[in-house]
Length: 66
Image (cartoon, rainbow, N blue to C red; front, side, top):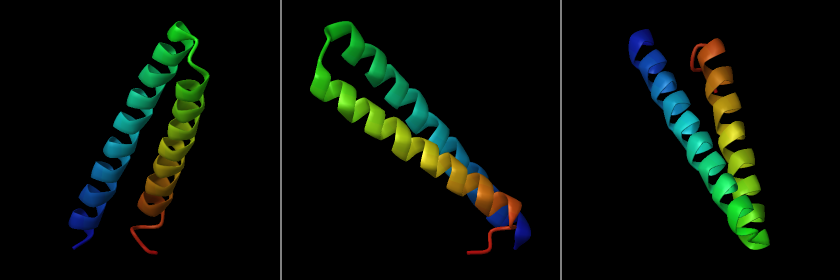
């Protein structure tokens, strides 16, 4: 059962990392267009994705315990 939890944690980490990459791309696009609303959205997305990465790492370190 431990391998399943570890794999689940890795998928969560991977998904959050992809979210960070997408949010950074949105940030670059917003800065290029000088769109302040899109910039705020991108910053909020980066914060949410970074939080997801942190939660996934914490779960992996604790062995999947909640």
